[in-house]
Length: 374
Image (cartoon, rainbow, N blue to C red):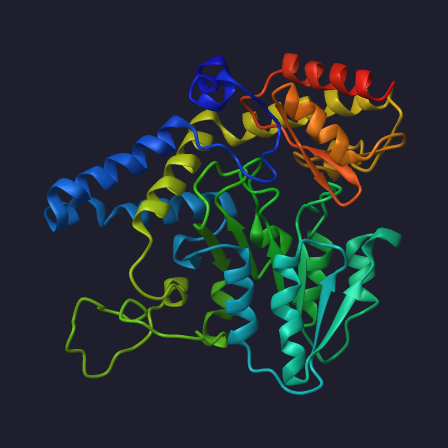
């Protein structure tokens, strides 16, 4: 992985272990965005023909990560944007309900809570007391329209087995919406096998892209059942026909995208995904899991309570723990003084390595933690 490590300038100064918050952009992302903006600056619309095909290529790359068809992928700003598209797109009736997994990141909670103003009940499934599918099953009924969960929990790093939940939702015609931001990029999905109807990801974490640009999967099964909350000139077929007397919506999830795309963001996202695909998603997952296993083994010798499952099947790239003797924020600050970047979430400390990190960096953070906790 030494070749890929050289593509991350952040390694010149920092031991960067905070990818669950933001990934530092690698050189291919920086260069791709700079080249595009430079060309726009010097040539304007003369370069249009050379960049209009790029979103199609990135859409195909994202489809490969989601495990779906390219026409089921829409570009969105972030997970909140995607959740709001679904929340706004269904025909809700007073008395309907949404079941959300308790304690997940607010991007997949707040959009549903605002439906309460329309008479929709929001129910919270306490998955920590069982598994996710069982917790949700105890909450759904004939008026449940959506189940909204995270693939990987942002705090503990717990990875859910979504297939049983997907089968439950398919049987009862419930839209299963998944926040995939803490898993996609560190590993790939299979939305069909998992029974997912909608999934969203922001590009700035495991996908190595810029903030403010993400992607969403919307199953073709639901395309005609979700109403776009807004329309634009690019929502329709033949959108370059500016005198269309009877515009019709596009036959793909691109109908949800709105107006002119964020070309710099999409190009940056594509460069990040391209780097992961070049390295190989299986190899990326293997490396990150190996680093997390090394972290967990070392933390087991320290005065901490580990929150992340030890079983690799139940985790992704996040390792979280609660120090018993010092506040997590104090440890994060101390590590930062040693050029080690982590973060505090709730009462715990969260470490999230990516594939270019090394075993030596893991040992360095463990050694520092041991000294702080004495």
